[in-house]
Image (cartoon, rainbow over all chains, first blue to last red; front, side, top):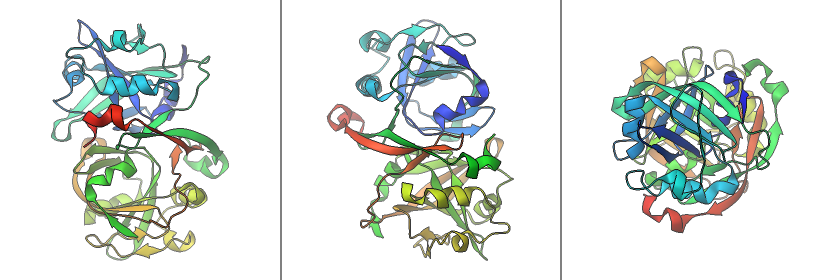
Length: 177
Length: 177
């Protein structure tokens, strides 16, 4: 994995892909599949939402650290698998043959098989809405990752795969950070 | 436009498309292009973020109403155009030949050219992070809309168009509301 400019990390989240979020509670690693994320600003900061029912949420609150990893379409069955079992009784790295990699600034692991990984610190939790606010502190991408297409959850059990890319850089020039 | 079950409205937002958000401040309609949204729960509730620099934000705060409209890829130049000018000096419905349609429960207009429209009430604004929390109150889709592909902003002036769809309904059965 190659380290990348932190100021570009938001470009992995902005298109709205399904992501894997890792935590380490001091004893073990865990992973959750999350589709409910958004960019908050270009620092970059992100929001995600989850709740008490989620086993990872306790680790996220306790350690105030996580990694957001970006899986590609070839990983869809691992992504769905991770999202449909619980870290309470499952070692998801082991079960889904995912490889934890030590990060630089947080104890939550990067996922080697993912196209990109973002180390994040939890800077706030808006309790009323269970919104977790994260600040990215380091970001990596795998320059050898051949599959570039991410997946987007529809919420009904179907997923949309990335298609073609359109360039509007000239029209957007005034808005690009 | 056909009214649809409000409980399914989150399926337009969950995949993370660029959306158009309309407001009406009592005098005029306005539209903004937003990529920073997320689903908060299945009621459905959504979060979006914007800030003081955004002309629509004042109307959103004052009226506590908006419509989230889902444009398709054939509208990309309108979407980018709406996002790169200001309602302070531009009638965006007029300039981009978009048609405002009266909603049922909010004064913010639906956009006829969009594939789907969701009438929303602002239920909270988390000032610290400029997060607007919206509850959907009515939802519509255009059953005659031929183009179904939405677009996802990367944040660097490029956009990813929806590609193929994958079905994992059986694996996901335990998680589908």
